[in-house]
Image (cartoon, rainbow, N blue to C red; front, side, top):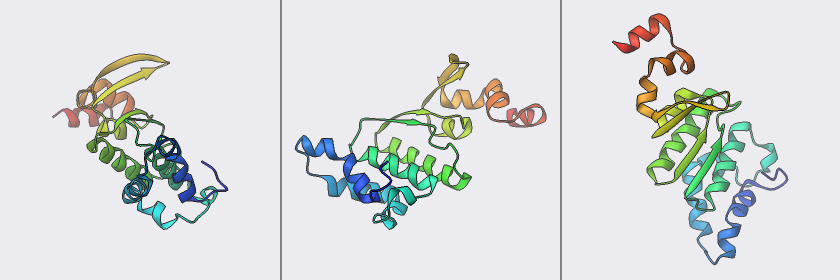
Length: 160
């Protein structure tokens, strides 16, 4: 992000390549981004450098969406964010999926990631330890114990 530029200017930059290719739908795309992230619309004249961490994450995703990507790659979108903002980010990821945007998500918050994923890979020390449909991994006792923070008594309750 460009901290000395406004939220709106940062979003406009996200559409630059599409504009160069002759697409002139930036205003419509910006409204779509503002619909997903109403907080950005409220702060459209604010300098990006003065946004909170969660708002910066929203702006980064919004700017990427201005390019109308077929694939959106997100690296740790929840890192360092408050739980309420994390829920909002993952709600938006789920909405983008519904809109047909393919998403490659790298995320340590396994619980949130498995809620929005179709398919998942579990990495351990850089190697694939498990893979499969997210719903299966979500119910796998090894994943529950190691990554979802439930073990012992809680695991048994989850299985019944």
